[in-house]
Length: 67
Image (cartoon, rainbow, N blue to C red; front, side, top):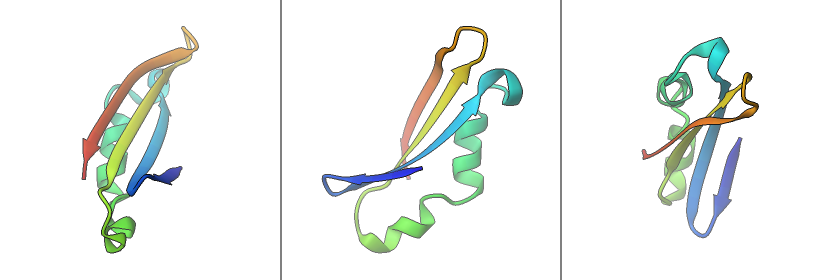
């Protein structure tokens, strides 16, 4: 999912922690070059990785990086 707001672009990746392991969402954003498609807009791109826990049914991890 990607959100474009206030002159910035936020591509999101969502993962279930127990199925993929920690850091998988961030790794996938970089491996697939999720920021590349938005660079031509000339707006800052912030990659957002969200990991959910199936056990607690809550957000277990959240990372954001400028790409």
